[in-house]
Length: 101
Image 1 (spheres, rainbow, N blue to C red):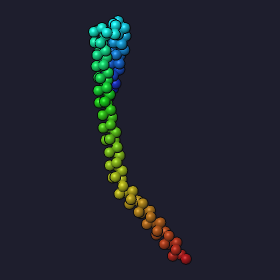
Image 2: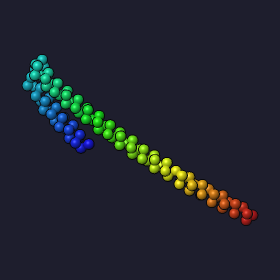
Image 3: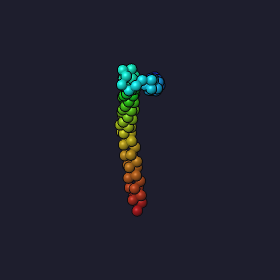
Image 4: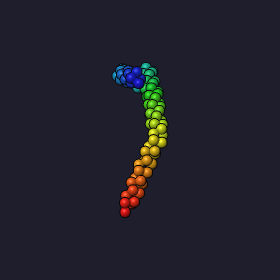
């Protein structure tokens, strides 16, 4: 990810330099259009890189979420057993209290 971040930063720096170079040409010049095409290409690279980063992050989030779900499912029988044991103990306690009367 750091590599991708640096790649995006470098492309932005190139774009800034090219935009400054546009001032050397007139709007209709072939060189002006050529520089615009280079700038567009750099924006395309930034877009592609950002999309790949987005895909990687989405995959990481999904994997993390799946791990948490599996962990929760694995914990469920233990939690149910504890809750049932607590309820049984409460019932036993209430029966013992009633038998005193």
